[in-house]
Amino acid sequence: MKTWIALAAMAAAGLSAGMALASQPRAGSWDPALGSQATRALNLLEAKGYGDFRNFQARGQDFTATVTQHDRAVTLLIDPRAGIVRALN
Image 1 (cartoon, rainbow, N blue to C red):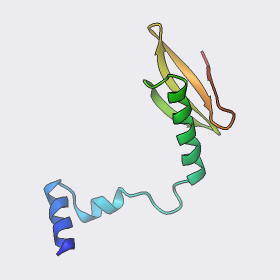
Image 2: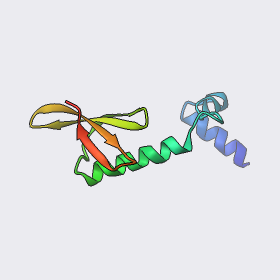
Image 3: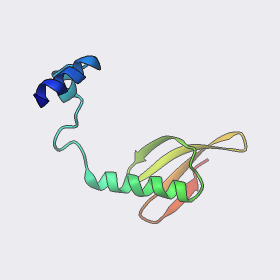
Image 4: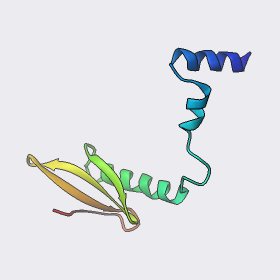
């Protein structure tokens, strides 16, 4: 019964069982250490007052994000291990 309800919900959402499974991360494709560092970097951005950012992405062991300061786009480098956020440009 639960399987039928889940399949009906997926059908209502326009998904098939194959699509739902294909969109799931594969074993071995997710690095928990990177996820932990990304969480630290995001928390650091928030703590430093950069709650409104875009283009957050990994850059080696660090991360970058773009913020707007004084009507100008600024790219930040976030080092979650050292707790440092600094402008690149």
